[in-house]
Amino acid sequence: MKFQKSIVFRNFLFLFTNQFFNLIIPLLVFPFLIKTLGIASFGLYSLAYASVIFSFMICDYGFNFSGSKYIAIHKGDKSKTDEAFSTILSIKLSLAFLVSIAWLFYIFFNPKFANFHVFGMLFTGMIIGNAINIQWFFQGLEKLGRFSTINSIIKLVSNISILFLVKSPNDMFLIPLIYSAAFLLSGVITIYLAVYVVKVKFTVLSFINYKQYLKDGFDYFVTIGTTSFVFTGTIIILSFFEKSILIIGVFSSLDRVIKILVSVYMPYSTAIYPRNMSNFQISNEDGIKSVYKYGSIALVFAIFCILLIQFFSKQLLFFLNTDLVPYAFWLQVFSVWFFFIVLNNLIGYHYLNGLNKSSIFRNTNILYTVITVTLMLFGCAYYSFKGCILAVLFGEMMLTFMLLFLIRIKKFF
Image 1 (cartoon, rainbow, N blue to C red):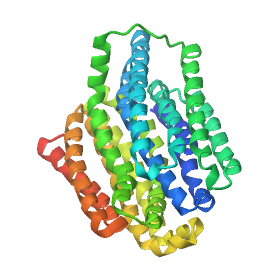
Image 2 (cartoon, one colour; image 1 turned 30 degrees about the horizontal axis):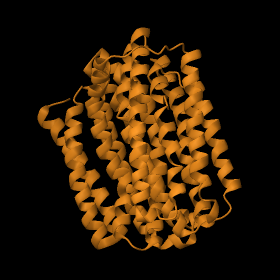
Image 3 (cartoon, one colour; image 1 turned 90 degrees about the vertical axis):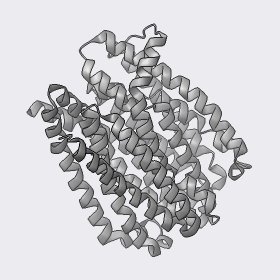
Image 4 (cartoon, rainbow, N blue to C red; image 1 turned 180 degrees about the horizontal axis):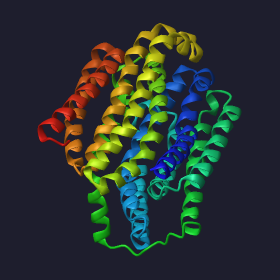
């Protein structure tokens, strides 16, 4: 048991370090970008960044969970891990190619990117780089040390480069250029590690391979897609209704504070996922105990973060930008969203997926997304960013109640 705890803690540290440099550092750079780019350019950058992050979800196709779960269960069988590695990587690259084409159409036909086509096109490298990211493979093997170290160094260098090279709005194109180079380099190096250090081998694939892996990842894809549409699509939806780039900038700033908290939590969720899945293979009782044990730590962390924001929201926003201080109340309201994000992640991805009831989580997420997006459309149209915040908060709370209700009536205890 102590050995298992040490593996979970070690992988959490690796994943947190990776997440810190991959997502949290770029989020922390945003006060610098607001001052350097100006509100209008920062608003355009936020819209592009949110859109490309959403495209990551399509390319990942839920393999971060289904692939990791498969590797965790079959890591003692090299032929199966080789097959999973080859199949999933080839599927992700195929999806990335299609998504990249769609991304170019989005850039050229979206009037908000008029005169900024090159800026938008440079994000394509991030899409391809994310597709060849094989964190799911090392996560399943529970061998994240070298992956995390390499990825962290590359992302640190890329963000430092932005701080030194981006001097004015005219340098805005350097941001996606640097990030794309970092994503591609990280992906290439870690694939090299998998092939020459872990000794994984590319295998000849059949149509049946693709069909089975796509089937295994489908529930995760739909679930993550619906969640991602709400989680990353808020700025995109708001941009259709809100004409003031200042308000979009304000909402983006509040949104990124919450995203930083989520980025801190996700490495922990990712680290405990293989352990929870392995315990479910022993018995449902062992798996449920594992989710309760590790999940309680996450919920205590979420409550602690929310309390900090309730007491220090003005000071936090003053540090980011003095013009944001009047919006402290809405940051306090928005922060409650974080608790329900963590809770739903634990119930759905860890609890229900461990019980092989991912279809329930998928179907509930579809309903949740339809209702939440509808609320967001009306909220943004009539109450701007305030309506958007209330819509996503109500939607996440509603998802919690639906999941708990289904668990109760179907007796998934």
